[in-house]
Image (cartoon, rainbow, N blue to C red; front, top):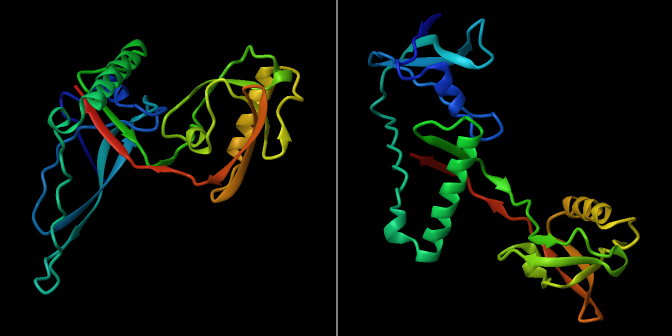
Length: 228
């Protein structure tokens, strides 16, 4: 099994810079001379002094010939979108602010490089959309300070200054303080199954109301981005 040397611009410090999501992803740059009609299987390797995979090796080479009777159609290229000309101004401003925040985050963590490669895999939306007052009097319910747009909290009809009293029949106000109540609410939200009925009892303008709707989980698409 032969080892492929990394390119000169791909030192170990560079590799550490490409770990955008909890240390699960990074990039190794390498060069490989290939021959036609051969299939190469590559694997990542660690050196004895490294905790990261810092080299690539050829595990096997298999001869292969094209079958003219079974052509494989070429894959279409992913569409590249010019954000500046296609996005509304409001979205462009939000992306600009987010880009600055991400760049600042990696600069402070010491992992920023000339460019930052981000990979956010397809995932279930975990943000319910509530901003709660942790200093609220729990006996009067959990006070909502703000609602995030386009979230389940907005869909069910919660509003700023509502006080949450119970969730699906489980009392929230029996906790010793608002911190414990928030932890309980987070667990209740985590346990919701898709396509089930959700009932939230709140106090709004000194009147009790019960808000109900069906919870449908939202799957967010994979996001890939390069900054720099």
